[in-house]
Image (cartoon, rainbow over all chains, first blue to last red; front, top):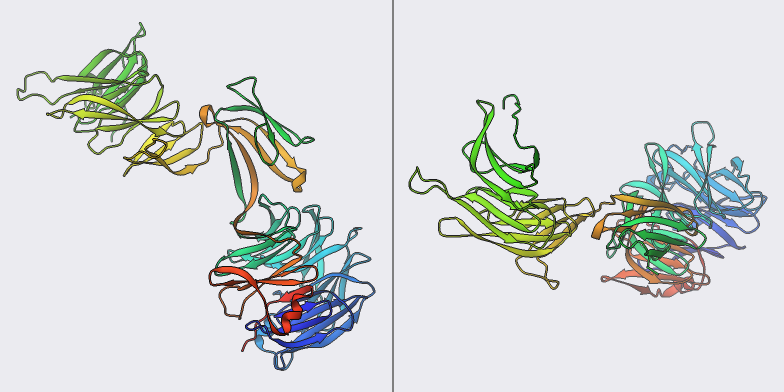
Length: 309
Length: 327
């Protein structure tokens, strides 16, 4: 596995955890993203380093670097079909499998001017840029293939989501078809996972949402759980917990199985008599109901817990 | 089947009508109310050749005023169970005696029931001696026909079986399984046991099918606290099956394990090598340190990793890529 810390990049053997190689960075690493054979690091000061894994020596070497004009908020690279593989320089010793799992583009969100740029790999040349036009920075960015289209997802610090379709049909990839949406009010973090063979994206915020593709459209399903905020997620398919996701929040770690997408959930509160009226008071967060049998009886119910006062 | 035909009935206020079992020709049984508000039971034979009704084998006048339902008793017993609000009566004919000219004997046996409005009934035994009835309170009772020497019904017995949703229809599925279809509450698939459980009920609910109707009122709530997820709260059901239903649309998460771990900033999963079927480690990054949970021998516990990686434990992980070499 590859571990990136604030000062270094380490290549570690997963079987027995011994260190294979280490690259120490002269300045502080802020964010990083990678695939099975590539790694991009953003260093404080706006420098981007692109490293490739050398299979023979089992170490990383810096292939290219670029100095951008601002600090970088987040970055993402991902192998997607439809991207031009020809632009990639393949190492002579790289295996065929490594090529197929390589990304040819890097998406970078900047900290100061709130723009998102696409850079080519391995040259780190800028391909295009778009202005987000918001006053909040992007907190997470993801290139992902949903259905048969490639999307660029940008999660902002105030819970908004901006999506672009990455269009590979021209000479150079471009960002088209911008869509804005609101997921919640807290910063969004993206994670990918597979559900029933389909690629899905989990957007963790105060209203956790799963994005997936159906018939060429991206659909959103809100997670219906009692705990409403998750900050991060990792797919965790283990012996003890098969097909699970591990989700973390401010105070806890939850491991669970996600159901098939989008169901109607009905929670029943038995009353023993027929209720005839119900109203909700948003200011106080209570419900008031009237039952038919005892005309003078009014049930006041708490929003979350539904007990009778 | 040939074409359908109409026959006129003399009786006007018909409360229930059923076909009888075990008759040589199709025979219907009617429960009707006459002009003086007295209820009677009559049988008619349907003559398909002449396309008319001829008087049937038996009739019973002046039955209980609250009589509301006929349950035909299957062969070989034949006859009907007449269900009323204060009694359940068996009405039938015994097999003709050795003399073919002798009149068939009428058998009428009854058992008293607590005042209730029986809504549904079904036969639950192969030899047609046991019946299940459900009333408006959701109480299930078993009616047992006690037989005498010549397969004649000597008496009826009533037994309380248990309580379920208020049944609109009962269907016996065999092997003690009954499906209760309800319009005021959730429909249920139940199993009848011969032994009573701790609450004194012979009924075990195997499955429930949610029914949110009848809905008398509802309100749509925008939960600002939960970041805008809306839910619908309905006043559902009636009588003892009344309830409030909170309805949301979304993906459910079935929780398998939950740990109180404050301050996790990021999570990654790892496996020992590429072809491993399962992930083995869950790496959590905190402010100032990193911890690893591993699945070992059916348990999940924290792992301490020795050697060089010790320094890993004390540093903040920015990124982890699970990575396997082809060799």
